[in-house]
Length: 594
Image (cartoon, rainbow, N blue to C red):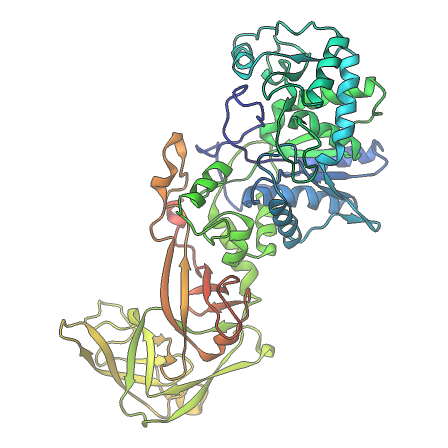
C-alpha cells in the first residue's frame, strides 16, 4: 500500500489516492510494554480452519515507485512479508506504476534494494513473485470495456473542477453527471477514442456508475481512467490513458490470487469500492470466489519524524538535509547509512504490533531496538571527540608501550585489541576541570585518575594561551599501576578516563547525528514543520581514534566507548580512511521529553 501521497483535495486532482497525515497526535503514545495485537493472524487462522483458501496465504506489498521508502513503509513490509513467511506463504512485491509523470526505474531499484536489505524476498518454489501494475494494462483496459458493456461505468466529459463541485460533501449528496446516462455504445466509442489519443488531457474520464448519494464519498462514481500524454518508464508511449489506483489495485490483487490484502487504515473507506469492482467483475465471469479480502491495520506514526513524501522532498530540495540518504532522514537509505540495522527495524516493528487504532510510537523505541541489537555484536574502540592534550611529564621521551583491552567486554573469546601508550595523549575536554564541582571524579589539579586500560596518573598543572584557554594538561604517571599488572591493585581511584596516543591516533571526521526535529510532532495542527528542525541534528567534529579503527570498512560498525554506536559512512569512507557516523548514543537522552 502507498502509505504517503501528495496532499490533494478529493476531485481536485484526478490522480488522488488515500492520504495519511502525521500532523497531530493520534490517540495514545505506544510504549514497549503495550499489548501487541494479532487480529490479522486471528483472521487468517479462522480462514485456515474453514479452509477458505485451502490453507494458502498470499499477501502483497505494492509501493508506488515515485520516491524512496521510509520507516512507515518498513512497518508495512514487515507485516506483509512477515505474515506470509510465518504461514508458509508468499508475499508479492508489486509496483503500482500507474502514474507515469512521477515514477522511474531509479525508485524501483531503490525499493527492491530496501526490501532485500530488510531481510525479505519474493521467491517461492523457484518462482519470483515480482510484478508491475503496468504488466496488467491490457487486462485492465479489457475489463473496463467489459464494465462499459454491462452499463457499470461511463465516460464523463466534465472537467476536474466540475467533477469536484458536483461530488458533494460528507453531509450533502453529490449531483449526477449530465453524461451519466450515455449508452454503452457511446461510452465504448469514446473510451476507445481516448485510448487512441483523440482527445486532450482532461477532456474525458471514465467513471464507475455506483451511487452519487452514498455516505461514502469514495463510492460517488469514482474515476477509474484518465488521459495522460506522458512517457511511461516501462511501457513508453504505448498508452495515453492510465487506470486509477482504486481500480488497478483490487484487480491486480485478484489477478495475482492474493488472499489477504493488508493495508493501512487510510484505505478503510476504500474497501467498499475494492469489493465493488471485484464483485462486478466476478459477476461478469472474470474472477471466481473467494475474492481477496482487504484488511486494514494502523500505520506507523513515529514521534520526531516526518513521512510525508511532499515534505521529505521539501527537505531535500530546500537543502535542509544532504539528500534522500542523509542519515537524519527517515528513509530506508538514510537509516541504513546512519547505521540502523535490518534486525533493529524488524524488532521495533514486532514490538509495536498490529492494531486497528492509530497511535504514536516513540522514536526512542527504534533507538532502543538498535542498541539492543548492536550491544552484543559490535567490537569496542576508543574515540576522543573533543580533544585536549594530556602530557605525561615523567614518561620517557620517544618511548611507547602497548596497552590491551577486550574486543568485547562480555565475550573474551573475541580476543583483545592493543594500542600504544606514549608521553602525549588526547583526552576528552570534559574529563578535565580546573575548578571541579562537588562529586567530580575525573581529572583536576592534584587528583588521581586511571587512564582506562593504562596507568594511574596525577594531575600537576595546565598550559594556557594568551586568552587563558587551557591548551594542555600535565600529569605524572605511576609506572607500577598499569592495568592488568599486579601493581595496579594497589591504586584505588574513582575516576577512569579515555585516551589515545597523539603520535599513533587515527584522525578523522566524525558526524554526530541526532533527531532531525526537536519537537515530537513537527507538523502538528498544520504548523510549519521546518520551524521544528533541530539545529543540533548534525555536528561534524575532528576526532582521534585508537589506531585499529582505521581499518574499518564502509558500513562496518563499532561502539566507541562512552560515546555510542557508530558506522563507517558508506559514501565518504574508503578502505584505510573511514569517516564515522553516530548511529545512536549509549543512552536515551530524550526520554523525559516524550
